[in-house]
Image 1 (cartoon, rainbow, N blue to C red):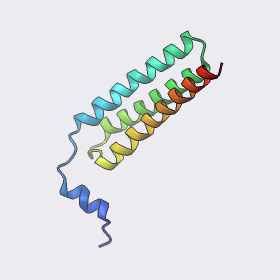
Image 2: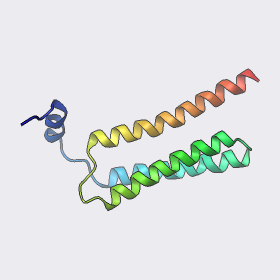
Image 3: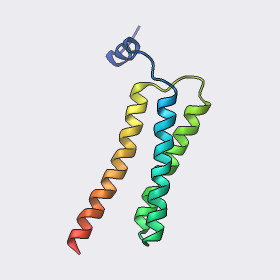
Length: 102
């Protein structure tokens, strides 16, 4: 009865393949681990925290996607990807700016 335009647009598109979110979240787990390891190796605690946050968020979403009988909607997948990219981009911008200031 109260369908929003977003719901109508979501229904008009083919469903998102289940393997796409699993692949992307798995790649974010690896990227988060890389940031975590590099942050520890270079003695950058903030980099290690960013890596841990990205790794844990993507790991939670990966496990949720695998265990869920309902496929992930395109909107949820897009929002989650933007969150992870936003965290990584904010860290990189802060790291770049702080490197130029010193």
